[in-house]
Length: 286
Ligand SMILES: NC(=O)c1ccc[n+]([C@@H]2O[C@H](COP(=O)([O-])OP(=O)(O)OC[C@H]3O[C@@H](n4cnc5c(N)ncnc54)[C@H](O)[C@@H]3O)[C@@H](O)[C@H]2O)c1
Image 1 (spheres, rainbow, N blue to C red):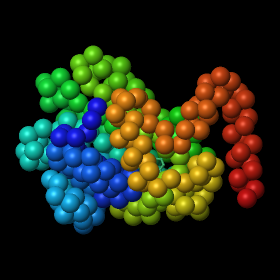
Image 2: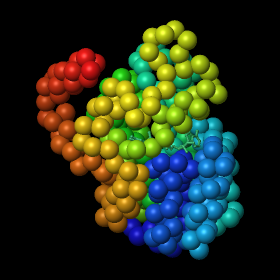
Image 3: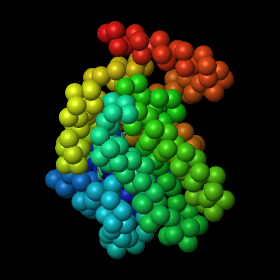
Image 4: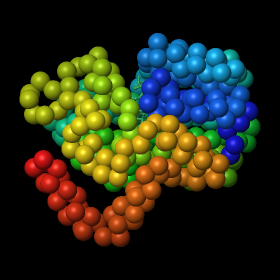
């Protein structure tokens, strides 16, 4: 599907991959880009940048980890532009640590990394189905196909995103709904610092010194793992998204090596687990 002349909503549009997607959509002549983010100033800046280039944009402040905000966001977009034809459900956070991270951090990660997609899709889907056409793009991660060393909550929630996207693709393809799922490895963004800031508002990331807390995307075992095949810029990722959408392929893999890793995992799960344990031991040893 060509993104030109279509109305797009991008969550997490103020920074990183979301910001690059917003700007790429405008360059590709999207009819309008709705830049949604909890970061009101950041969203306003991206919308202003798009308008300065002669395109239509709207900044909406929304916490998509909250059902009412997610619904209101879609209503604002439809009020302003009459329809939502492309959804980029992209906002997400990461917390390092395993089972020990506080329940509030687990809950917040579930709300933002998984439920946000459910709430926003529930709001945009009726219009898309009525028009017989729409494109849903979910930002998961390579962690959603494999695993994120050092972060149980990220691994689990990103697998859930892939599962949701697959379910939607299977269920709605015959009604004109296209679905893609973005699964990059390491991308140079503010993910670590943003997550730290957002989790600060929902409770202490870790009071017990067990190593839980927000991960800087630029360091940690998970980042070392994700960076094995190189670090991409968010602009490179956005270009890959638009290109893959043109072919209407489900998996968007800016790091193509991920396809091989996923195949190896499926071919011999025991061997893959042994390999991941060895990688964890190697990265933990520094
Ligand atoms: N950076 C990476 O290495 C990488 C790799 C794979 C997947 N991802 C995924 O890419 C997506 C985008 O992250 P990024 O790397 O561009 O990070 P980023 O922090 O630069 O951008 C994320 C944006 O999402 C916004 N956001 C977070 N929670 C929100 C909420 N509840 N409501 C509205 N907006 C919210 C933030 O304010 C921020 O502007 C995430 O889903 C992340 O998990 C990132």
